[in-house]
Length: 396
Ligand SMILES: *Cc1c(COP(=O)(O)O)cnc(C)c1O
Image (cartoon, rainbow, N blue to C red; front, side, top):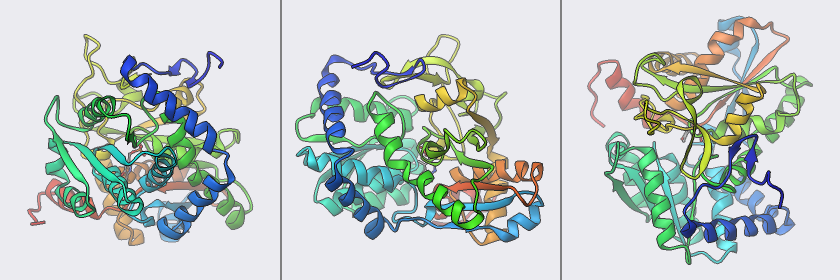
């Protein structure tokens, strides 16, 4: 194998304890065996189409287009997928792969709860045992999703270490995997962690850009001028970007959570404020304190509240192929309200970060141009928190 294996420029790699090495090698070998296997792919396509509801719609947002006065705005509706976000694409792929590997148990980390719910769903469908690790803070912010996972037959373990958020849930899931690699697959939820996860997750999510490309050619007879997606670990964005990387005229824009602002300590904008480092098995950019320790991060959105970014994004940033812009809580909440009122679509607060960037950028273009915004999930889960943010006290 070449030295470049699992690397995106200088980023990526496999910085893991020896005890995990066998699990990761077993996973890589299995993935290489099945990724081009026609039977595996036809089973996955059937799950995507019959179960998850793919292909997801590409919707022309006519009112928003007229209101903003610039590029035509299209919305890639991952919020319409079964379980309400793009997470199901990756989970169905990994669960099917785990099954082929003879694994009987799935473990996962979750932030907003979307990946946990998606994993619990796939486990229920495929008759597998499932354990989800979730920061205790997040179990409070997303209580309804905790109930959903339990309803689906999964066990949810609140993680109390560190800041009791997503990064701690990832660490705990990795520890659990080393304890039980024989019968357990770690279903990682984003394009991060040690190789081969960033590649596997990106490949399963790349169905998003494959569909956008075909749908845009059908609707406009040309490629979009820009594709915009929010970035936590970066899976919906990588999936939205991947099939456009070679199309150099298509602008790729990732939106990071700036929280209360990139000049405050309450932010999760990794590209804007982070430095190169090694964490969770990968080399990439991370928010760090002056000692190089992982800094506590903050965003109103639990799904973007992660101190790192997937290694392929770090590389797309280094090579300037993609742009990364910070979007604050306030801007995201305004976009959440705007899309709800303008198009009757309540986006996830994560996706609202991408909507906000599009609202700013649209005017740089004319109606001959078009912008695709990936709506990574639906916003029902966020309504109570946004109401509270606006000072309304509603009971869930
Ligand atoms: C998890 C999640 C995200 C962030 O994860 P990525 O890996 O960056 O895509 C964004 N939007 C929604 C709706 C999510 O559930």
